[in-house]
Length: 495
Image 1 (cartoon, helix red, strand yellow):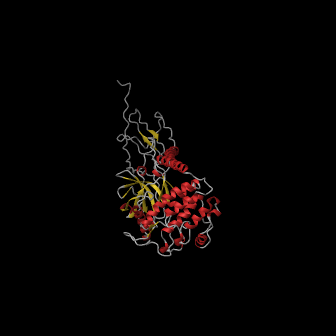
Image 2: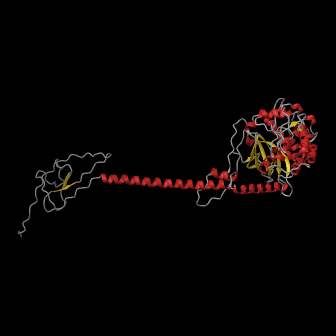
Image 3: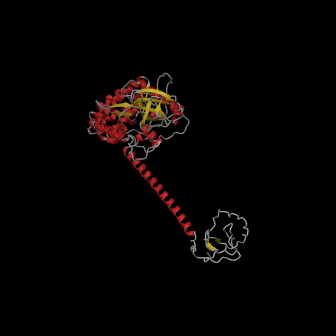
């Protein structure tokens, strides 16, 4: 589990996942600035072509000096991630245009022209540097919310861009894509991309994509009607392209003419630059009959509400303070609550799904986890008490069974009851005992220590069950006692 990347970026939470990498929100440990860190996943790191595209994306973001291209601030390899490459870029707040259209529907023509004019400035700078994006789509245009200014559009993901001129560490064209290789998103790719004609790809390829993107933003629909990939390729390469007003009459004939030049199947017949393309778009949309659609004010309000929800979710995601009555957290829970972590994605290893730390969960999830822990702790405590009570009950039953199994003792013979002793067993004066009669194995005969007569007293001994572990103690053989003469009796009348 990794807490710091390159010893200077503290991982806070996961922001998103893509085909080649994962993006995290990180904090620079020295400046405290919040940034976005994109790291190549294990699958991409094992592919040399994917690694080349990943490094190209970082390099292009640093080369194009435009506020409408996401700014890249750092790029390196992380020893903590097994040498996997990563790059750091500015943290954007907002949503991409695809999500925006999904939420609010078609955009107002003025909003479309404003946003695409900003995209055009970024693409024209890239084309001057010999860089073709060739994966332009609403998902790769991000609407960034600013504090005191209107939101602006930023172009993302130059991962499959093509370099028309050699640069340091690059070859002409994309090394990962040779002739015949299909790169891009089918709905927005140009015919030369679909045919895999690498030599024909240039700035006009981005012009085609801008025409399809514009229609998507104005109608919240896709131009193509194909249901399968094969049908899409037929419509893209061979089928006649009907004018957009045939399906959306409010667009008008001016827009039809603009769209026909933007999406001409011959690259040389398209607009020469994206800037010129969007300039004519503004004129084409002035005469359309429909003027409704999501306005910029509505979009700003939506971005504000999304920001508030995001901040509330981030606040609720903080670990809850435990009450003194709760059990102390384990070392694992303490480490999870302190700092979110990221699973190292080492090349040539299976991709591991990143665990969700406490700071990534919502407040309801934290509350649910705390309640579940309390119920689990009470359940274990109840089970322990029940087990102790059951053990005490078993011990009591065993003791009671032993007491019941022991026979009750016979009543003792009173000391005043004198029994006649056999004449053959006289009392020994030396030992004070008499031999044990063979016919009474459960009785012993003792002589009183002090008595006025020589009468023998037999005391019955209660029968006891011998213990299984007790072994009988051997007795020494008894010797017959010597006969004792009776003591002379004094005459009470003698003086």
